[in-house]
Structures are given as C-alpha cells and as structure tokens.
View: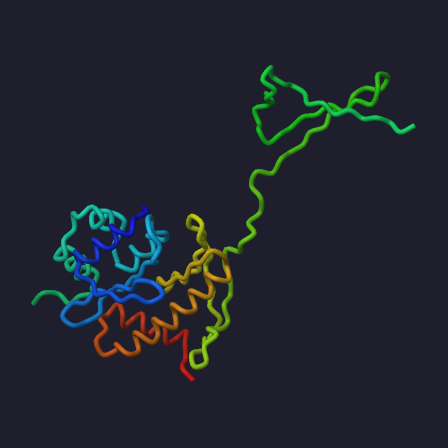
Length: 92
Length: 143
C-alpha cells in the first residue's frame, strides 16, 4: 500500500507523534513520557516510497495501517493496539 | 565469391507481426540460394535479465570515527519505484537512495542517528524501543 506525504502527516498529527526535521522527517510516538514507536519519511513530495517500512515501524498491520490512513483509527485505538502488543503497560 | 545469406522471418501476419504464441521466440528462415534447402533458426529472447543489483549485501563498517560495527551486517536490497532500499529486517530499519551506494550510506547515517538518539533517550524508552536499543548495542559499539 502506497501513501502520500499528506496521509503520513495527517496520521502523525492525529496520533500526536512528535517530529523533528533532519535528513528525513523523523517522528516518534510517546506515551506517559516513554518513547514507544518511531518512524521517518523522506522530504520528497507525492507518493512516499517504502510505506510498508513506515507501517512496520509504527507497529501496525496492513488493515490497521489502512484504517489509520483513511482516518478510521483514532489515537485511542492506536494506544489500544500498542497495549495489546505489550508496548504500552496494561490498564490497572 | 562470398555466399549471400538471406534471413527472413516466418509466420508473418499481414500487419507484420509474428504469429508465434511465444513472444520471446523468433523463427527465421536462413536461405542459402535456390539449390540449398533453407535452414530454420530459432532465436530465444531473454525477457527476464539477471538482476544487476544484489539481493543482499554485507556491510562491515559505519564510516564513523567513534561508532563501529561489532559484526558485519547482512543488508537486504529491494527496489521501490526509482529508489533502492537497503534494510535490516531484524530491527526494522532502512536507508534509501537512487543507487546502491547512496542507499547503503543512508542506512549507515540512519543507524548512527538512531544509536545516538536512543542512547540519549535510554532513560525513557518504552519496551519496544528498549529492545531496539539492546539490539543496536549488539551491532554497534562506541570507541
């Protein structure tokens, strides 16, 4: 599945990833002060290559990634996915 | 006097297209004059040329004054549109570029930046990132 730069930007804004511009645009997701996932994209315009790598770095499967791009996955949904994968501590 | 050989394609349609069901196969009739029987020649065209880019590559150093690879890394090389991607599937990391050298150099820079970032943030890494930091330390040492 290929995504566009605007899809990437919209998704990281929705999940409230922090960003930094270096050679690439770096983005990482924090939860309760901990760095949970990280990804990056090139500064090129239009379609992003290697979007599959972005997906795996965000710890999403293809269906979850598709829903995220289509704005059908909220930040809370993303946190729940990461929690099920043991990347975020379970609710007590 | 040199012998004149004439080559003519066989099974031509009116539009000049070969009728052969196999587009990779070209049949020619080699005529050597009126008294000699023609010789049939078959030419097989290779449509799948061998890959010029390797599927895997061994990277032995990071070209950095203080960060060294403990062991050579096996890097997977794939193509995505016009870019080559050099990736290490075990740690989900990759570099890219218009050619192999650029992709591998980008991967080196990515590993260096990732190592330095995780090192500076190690006190607040989640379990996934902590695992990645441990994997990176098995690959990279600081001197």
